[in-house]
Amino acid sequence: MTTEIKDSGTVEAADGHGLGRAYFERAAGFVLEVIERNLPVFRDTYPAPASEGNVYPGIGNIEWTSSFWTGMLWLAYDLTGEAKYREAAEYQLASYKQRIEEQIETETHDLGFLYSLSAVAEYRLTGNETAKGTALQAADLLAARYFPKAGIIQAWGDLSDPEQCGRMIIDCLMNLPLLYWASEVTGETRYAEYAKTHVAQAAKYLVRPDDTSYHTYYMDVETGAPKYGNTHQGYADDSCWARGQAWGMYGFLLSYLYTGDKSLVGLSKRLTDYFLTRLPEDGVVYWDLVFTEGTEQEKDSSASAIAVCGMLELTKHLPLGDPDKRRYEDLALELLAALGRRYTTADLPGSNGVLKHAVYNKPRGMGIDECNLWGDYYYFEALVRVLKNWKPYW
Ligand code: GLY
Image 1 (cartoon, rainbow, N blue to C red):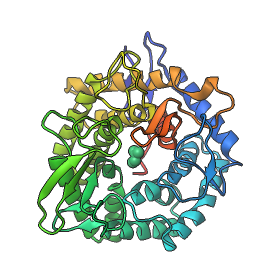
Image 2 (cartoon, rainbow, N blue to C red):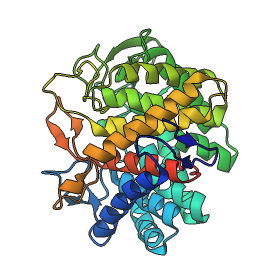
Image 3 (cartoon, rainbow, N blue to C red):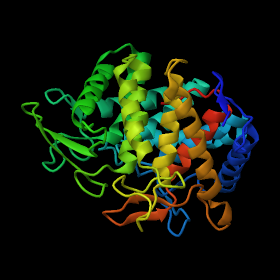
Image 4 (tube, rainbow, N blue to C red):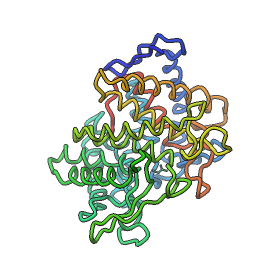
């Protein structure tokens, strides 16, 4: 394979696998078609986190996932420059503003996902001051979830809830950019300090010596002592939840972008190398990496889409002489193409999703073998990364 990603992020293709720029343009064209059909439907409502029978119901802006839809609108605008996508994304800002002002379902670290892909994206792309203020309000609420003794941001629930108190989760790495961004725009260092301390604790306690990851880990918020790791969405406490590993692959790098701490690139590499040892024949992982080829378990295409974004970012930070640079580039493009060939809803005309065969939460019976909104978002982000020199909203 001779596909090459230039500094511009553009694929200059000439290879035997048909993975040229034209291939990825067609794949992005399909995502744009789905977005176009959904534009009038998801304006005052948002797709639910997971589809039902491959169709997303519409819900209010109450879930941790709303911004994956708004983020797709920003990606569509970024890629095409077409005003209709920008208008649709801008229209939704009022809903995010109301949500943070009225604190509707805001007791969650997912404020990072929610406001990075909506208000921060808008501020970065248009300079809108209301978007900036809204994102800063979200950053304040996120920062309030930081426990100084434990050095972590609590993932879920009320801060005094004994079941959730002191619990960090690997997904949170994706929420930290909101804090770094807040420090950049306000000059107040505390946001970034919380994020840096959290990422160090995540590296220490969530990543295991064999380069797998815990989904969640409890810290004692009074003494700062580590307690124990367990799972919420994985198969077992000591297994490796596929999406968690992908959040780690990408998430540690996002902190590297803001801190320049090279050890985070090394961590991302370790998690990536483990993930790549667990690929089934068609390149799309099962929902927990304990499962491999031959199992009846479901795939989680969303984990693969996140992993591809992480690998595309990772290649940017490896020196030219590093043989892994080319290996990750090639594999990322192959995995992205594998998703495009067999995992999109192109053969399901009644679907309003993009990527099928994902799993939301298998232990709780949620969104199993369905589309999910973050799978759609990261698949599109990966395509945009390949097709243009994309500046992350994260
Ligand atoms: N961050 C929640 C999930 O990945 O399901």
